[in-house]
Length: 220
Image (cartoon, one colour):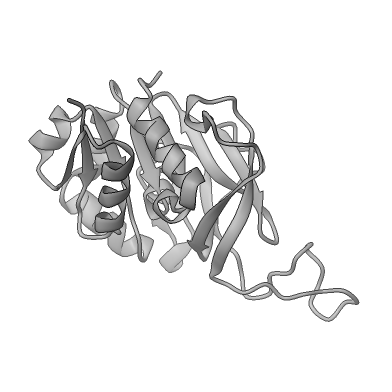
């Protein structure tokens, strides 16, 4: 029986993630835990996150989750979700600037208060202000041919809720991209880590398929 550990550091939408994993992998043992030994013994690890990155990183560092994430991802698959993905980056602009775990060298940027659909200045003919936070369904273009995209169509729609985004330009680890006023990384991948900005547990059939793929993925 495979064991899937969902890291509980007090800053994640853990119930809905665990229920979604249980749905796609009824034979798996799904644990929501902050116990480092249980996380180390799991076959798959999910690293979720919601809320302000400053608060997330404070708890991550206080509990040693930053080093634990690096440790367990060396030899088994790890899935980062939403702020869990952002925490894996090098640095975030949120809260005046916060250093993150630095598994990926990319930076996390603020959408801004004057975000428009195609980068026009507000007030120009045809300009349309986009709401921040970004909340809704966006198509994701698959950039890498990755096992996590198995049975998921290119340009499939996933559900996003965020005010900050991981930059797409110059991002060598990007696995999926989308656009909301700017091009952004919807997914990144490196080694045994796959991380997504969207919420798979809220993304209907495509999100459930991605979680099923994660349970079945042996990693790299």
